[in-house]
Length: 435
Image (cartoon, rainbow, N blue to C red):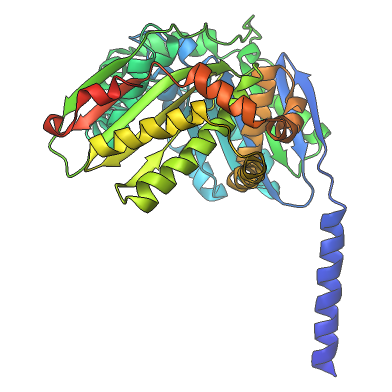
C-alpha cells in the first residue's frame, strides 16, 4: 500500500509539472535602456537562461590591420575588470559554473553566457563589467594575444579551416566580408594596447548593442540589471545598416598545392540580401541541392565522406559547394550535373513540400537551445528591423514553389569562386570553369 501511495504521489507530481509546463509563459517583448535595445523571450518552463549581447557591425568595423580587434578585446576582458580585478573574473565564473561565449562573425560579435536562473544576477554583473570596464593590463593582453595568434596559426595548418578562410576571402575581395573577424597572425600582432583601449572607449556604446535574453526572467528584474550594468555607458550614434552589395567578380579558381590523403574543394557565389524574398528561396534551393549531392556523391558513388551545398546565413547571403574527395574530377562533374538539373528541371512539388517540412523540423531541432533562440530573434531584429519577423520564418519557407527553386538556381548559382586544396595533378581545372 505504501509503495502504491508513493507511485500515485509521483504520478500526481508529474501530472502537475506537465500542467505547469503547458501553462508556461513564452511571451516575447522588447524595450530600451539608455539606448540599448533589449529583447526578452520569457520561458517559465525552464530555469536555464541565455543572455547574448550582439555588438553590431562585424567586419564593417574592420580594416586589414584591425582584423580580430573585438575578439582580442573581449578575450582580454577575462583577465580583469574594474569590479573583478585580475583573476577574480575567472574565479567568480568558475564558482558560478558559467562559461562566457565569444563569437566574432561577419555581421556582429556575440558575447554571451548561459546559466541557471538562480545565478543570473551574479553572472550578469560580471558580463556587464567585462563589456564596459575591462582593465586591459598590458601583460595580460599580451598573454591573450599570443593565445589568439596560436589559434590563428593552427587554423591555417588544418585543411578544413584553411580552405574555408581562403574561399571566403576569394569570394569577397574588396568587400568587408573578406576580412576575418577572428583576426590573423599579422593583424593580431599589430593591434597595439593604445588602439585596443581607444576601441573600447569609442566603440563600446549602447547604440551598437543588442541584448537578447531567453529564459525564466521577468522584465522588471532584467530592466534593473541592464540599468545597473549599462545605464551610464555612452550611447553613441551608431546605426546598423547591411554592408554594401558584394561586387560580381566573375569566376575564379585558386589552387593551393598540399600533400594530403584527400582533396578539398570549396566554392561560393553571391546570393540575395536578407530582406529579399529570394533569401529564403535560396535557403531551400541549397537544401535541395545538398540532398542530391549526398545521394549521388556520397551514397551512390561513395566518392566522399563529406559533401555539402552550404548557405551562409548573413545580411548578404552566399551559397556554395564543398567536398573532400580522392576523385575530384568525377565529383566536380556530378556537382555540375546536379546544379544544371536544378536549373533546367522542375522540382517535384510534393517532394518539395516534404523536404521543406523536414527542413523546418531539422532547423528547429538544431536551434532549440536558449542561445540559439536568442540568435534567431537577433537575426530578425538586425536584418529585418523587427524581432517579430522571426515568427514569419516558417510561412516564408512554406511559400517556396518549384518555380521559385528553379528561378533562384538560374539567377544565383553561377560565377563560382573556387579554392582547391590538394594534389594539383589530380584536378582538371577546366571542370571548375563550367560553374
